Length: 266
Image (cartoon, rainbow, N blue to C red; front, side):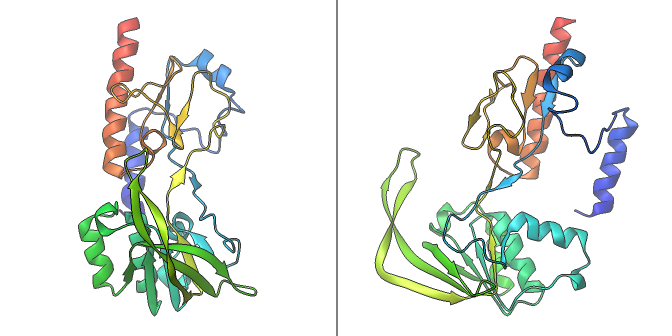
């Protein structure tokens, strides 16, 4: 999706008479009580702004990046302005991880290794994305977890270990156990983390009745209403992270629910 196309969609919204207020930190100026006093309904479509950290030693080293930051730089700068290392490791199993891996390869990385802790059947990346990954010459390591990162002034090594599935946990997914004697090291000069995003509780300020589940806003999936009578939410901030088409569909359904509620009060 090109920037021009995205801007044309913004123009369509403004032509409908929508007032855009940019560079505004909601919850501070205006405050939530001020918003609720002025408006009959508030829709939250804020996405998942905080990337989930790897949680391993050494991830603070220069050369360790979050996938969304890496991809954002590609969008904002011409390809020739972006440089990557020769040996790149991407950690994650979704479409975002695939995007980061294939882009790194196309930007000139000699070796790109994508690392995922579970098997192929449990990856959220689409089949055609995995085919693209392999067609671009990227390596895929399954049932492997990162253990630690190291380097003097920049990331240089990524220590990994093989894992095996254990018994299913409360969420239905199998637990993982590290396999003894399977530790190995990859030489790296760029590590890209792509293990998901979260919306931290409290990131939006205090909204009465708003609750969180699994790093996303809890909503009634049929109506997309939250615990506050004036607040609806949809998209990644309410489903925990999916695709653009899911966010569009949920936004449509939330608008129908919002409209029906307000029309019933008229």
